[in-house]
Amino acid sequence: MIRKICVLGLGLMGKRIVLRLTEKGHNVVAWNRTPLPLDNPISKVATLASSPCEAVKNASVIFALLHDGEAVEDVLIRSGAAECMAPDCLVVDMGTNSPNVARSIAAQLPTSVRFVDAPVSGGTKGAEQGSLSIFLGAQNEDVELAQKALSDLGSLTHMGAVGAGQAAKLANQIVVACSIAGLAEGIAFAETFGIAPEILRTAMRGGLAESQILETIGGRMCAGDFSPLGRATTHLKDLDYAFSQIGAGSESLPTASAARANLLNILEKFGNLDHAAMVLVAREALLGAEENQNLMKAKKLNFRK
Image 1 (cartoon, helix red, strand yellow):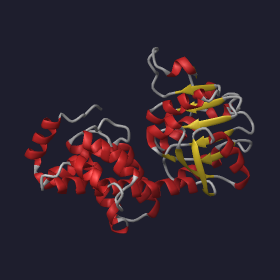
Image 2: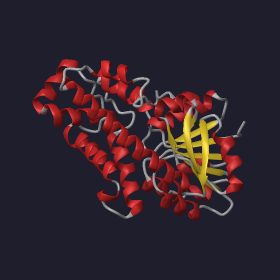
Image 3: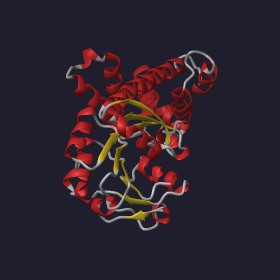
Image 4: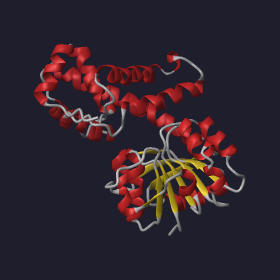
């Protein structure tokens, strides 16, 4: 067992990571930029620190689950937390940002601190079950330590040196965004012929379209549940990081660019819902805004934000 683990960031993923680690018997100290209510479940299983410096002090492993690269640098570097880290501790950036951010953070940490980037795929369910797919960017000498630190959270693949984990995760996000967009358009297309999404989803199982996207995101589309587990803003941020890395416009990644436009449409027309709400965008394009609104009312779709 690892002596002490620190978790920085208690959003949708961070709080589930804390619960998973404490279930496995780890001693966890956690910190969040926004103070948590006193009756939150995290305070019952972990120690809540008042600052990043207090959180990381004496920790052997530090997990950062923060929104973007700017937040990672703010919390790890600008707050002074790096100066409070124990020698030889392992810092694991599990959020999604960019290879450049990963390498920059690694360069700014004390030389005695070890750093890996380990963004994940599998969502909140994967975090709860310890079945996350982890994209590891690490120097060879840090791979074994990272494997031990992440063993209770999922399975990892060493993608290459620091930054390679982020590059692989951005590729994953391109595939996921394009897959969701395709599924959304397929469902909306079938609906124009009077085919219910649930029937289409059942029929597609076992064929080439069968996938985790069909099961998880397709299930949410069928149920009309767009309460955010994978927020449109978060996925949009990831695609923007991908575009920034290649220094090119939409013509270089045309399918990803189309999926990005769908995410923007979610935000502009429906709010910061789950990325499964791409089906609402597709329905509006095929059925028209009025019919889409009527369908939403008839199904009493879930728009919890």
